[in-house]
Length: 388
Image 1: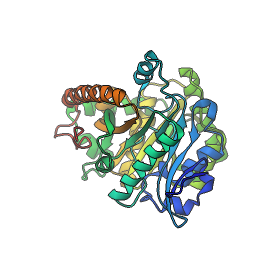
Image 2: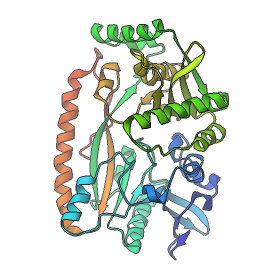
Image 3: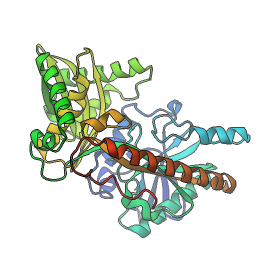
Image 4: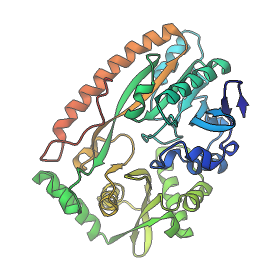
């Protein structure tokens, strides 16, 4: 733990703060900012300094009482962030400057929108942002970044924090869908027929699905899901960051937030999707399979999740980053946000223009995608005006 006389403490481990004190700072509707999730990553070997993730949580205190916090990390690369700034790092290098290390306010490996400024009101959020900049100055860091914050936190950022936007694809229930057929009925004939055909192919292959929460999952279920996770990372040539211990930690510490969708053939699991659920949102995180069957990916990752949302009364399903193929299945373009403080004024001015041009491009891209909606009625809100 590092401290300053002004109530700023930078924690090198969430073990340094009580879970109750941390969780009192947020509404509890987003599982990724809970003490159990973030501390679990640290305790089970998912964050390693050599991988570029070193905890540096910025916190504010009054009389030894925690009043605000931002989960944060010292980063020596940009891996696992999903807000791409490699071009910025290359620009720094061309001028003989170091872009890394940097401070990042985010949830590791998770491109999921949620609270990043855990504070009770606007003034305290602004104080927290000032503390982040103060920490960056004190630590000699050239920049600080906050990824996937909600629109509701935008007002806290001053002009010094450059805005960026991107597009993800989210499913939203407008409020009157109770069954899967209600969702299909909102589609045009072509897309409705395609979805039904995809689901029918999976059913004809003899695939049966089980949806289990953490407290319902057996050791075999957890082992199977972790195996699917490894399989996907091997196929893409990436190093898996999560550990079996973390998956078991989620099952024990967040039993109703962990949702496993398992596809069985002849009683044995052949595919699975790992999701987390919040108060009104399902978050799809990882998937894998040991069998290649037509439609298995779409059914496991999308349609079973939609069924779950309808059954549980969840309004939103975020299945992960990227993938225009999701549009045809009812996941529509939605803006996501990030903010960036750049210490060098000249680089900040150059990147401000770069961000403005990028925003225009992203807005144009999202507008072009609106014509590809599978629904007969206007699309749900795409996540606010990104020009703010």
